[in-house]
Every structure is written in structure tokens, then in C-alpha cells.
Length: 310
Image (cartoon, rainbow, N blue to C red):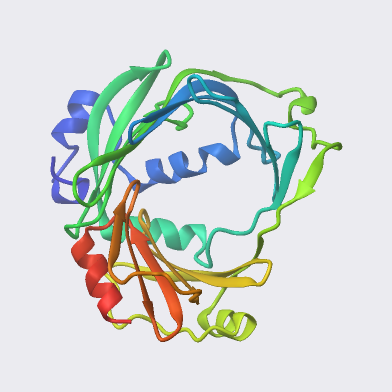
């Protein structure tokens, strides 16, 4: 369907489906987690794997409890309290992590990038988890980028089903709720931080930082690629330390898709031009005493051009 800006009046899709077509809907969907209190059950499918999921979420206080249960495997509990997270280890212990901001780019700028680089088209109505939902296709304006199909609760705007497709057109992951219930409050004990058997994350992360800060603090020389795919902006760098190992993780973002570049001093044994493909396309190589890994949901040709420009 044509976008609303190309229509002299309400679109045919709107008249047929009573479905609004507006960036305001995306804003509501992307912020729903921060204002709703709910419980849900569903599943995550990633490649050939399937994991059952239970969620307790108090968005007003930024508290979440997840239980992940792979069929035939042990369940894993994750508790998040604002900027801290605890993950059950399966042996009665918990791994504690301090959470960092995702990137230097703020929410308003992320939404602006999304609208600039993607077309938002209505995709019909569907009942999911007993709720009436509106579907939206988020389609790239530049070929080779990923796309997303979202079905959001027409009343609360909570996304109840999300399908992610990479730049090659492969369905890489699906997240879907089969049950959802909204609440005024939830038992605070659900989100209580573990007090026994807690160990600190051995991986230390610092960031997000700009290029100059990341280079100074890591001691690793950094430079911008000569080529970055259209629409992507530098979103920040993280320094990752574990023992004596130090790596820098740089990110570029276009509103939906993230490209990551990892650089660290090479320990040897890294072959050039090694491609892997799972959730994202990835290429690894070594040069001048450093090892690199570049990954993203964009097509390999774009990753290759970005790699060759470094």
C-alpha cells in the first residue's frame, strides 16, 4: 500500500481495517514496555531452536522477570532491576551484571533514523493472545537491509508478535505471545534481587564511548571505515575486558538494524575472510597484529565493502 503521505485522504487500508498509519503508533509500540504492567507467556524461535518464555513486567518501575525454557532443557531465570541483572546459572548460583546504555543515540534520534530509512506499511489485523492486533511491516528503503513484521495490541500498543527477516530475505527469529494479561501491580517479590550464590560477571564493559574515548581507554587504534552502508550512523563503542584480554566493540545503527565491529590484539590462529551465518552474517579476519569480526543482518556484499574500507 502507498504511504499516508502519498494519499489525498485516508488510505484504502485504513478505511478497510480502521488501522492507523502513523509514526505515533511506532512510538507507542516502542515505549509500551516502559509504561505497562503485564504478565505473558509465549515462545521465541531463532533458526531451528524454540524456547518457551514467561514474562512478568512492571514497566513503571523498570522491573522484569523472564523464565526461558528450551524443550528438554533446563530453565533459566533472568531478573532485571533498572540497570542491574541477575541470571540463574543452573547450579543454584546467579551471575550479576551491571547494564549499560545500548548506544550513544537517544530514543528520538533512533525513531528519526527508523522513519528515514524504512517504510511503515499496514499489514492487516489479527487476534493474538485473545487481543485484537494491528500488523505493520517495517520495510527497508535500501535493498540489503533487514525488515520486520510487528503485530501490536490495538488497545495497549504492546507488540505481541515480531518477525525479523535479514537482508537476504531469511526469517531469522520470531517472538510471539500466546497469553497476555494486564495488571495494576505485581508482587514485588517476583523481582527481588538474589542475595545468596551471587557471583560478579568476569567480563567488564565500559561505554558507550565515542571513537576518541574508546581508543584512549583501550589503547587500541581505531578509525572509521571509509564506507558505511547508507542510513547507518555511528552509535558508540564499548570496551570489553576479561582478564588480560581487551576488545573494542563499535556499533552503527539505522533505526532498526545494528552493525557491529569487534577489534582486539590478535593471539594468532585467525584465518582471513572466514564467513559465518546464524542470526547475522559475520566475517572474521586478521591484519597488522589485530583480529577483527564484522557482523550484521545486512547482505554479505555490504559487509564486504565495509570491511575492505577499513
